[in-house]
Image (cartoon, rainbow, N blue to C red):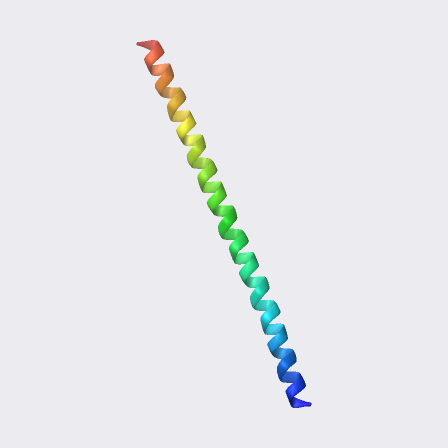
Length: 57
C-alpha cells in the first residue's frame, strides 16, 4: 500500500514538473519571438529613416 502512494506521488511530481517545463519553455520562446520581432521592426524603421535622409539631401 505504501509503495502505491509513493509511486502515485512520483507520477504527480512528474506531471507537475513536465507541465512546469512546458510552460517555462513556452514563455521563453514567446519572449524570444517578441524580442526578435521588435528587433526586426527597429531595423526596418532605421532603414526607412536612412532612406528618407538620403532622399532629403
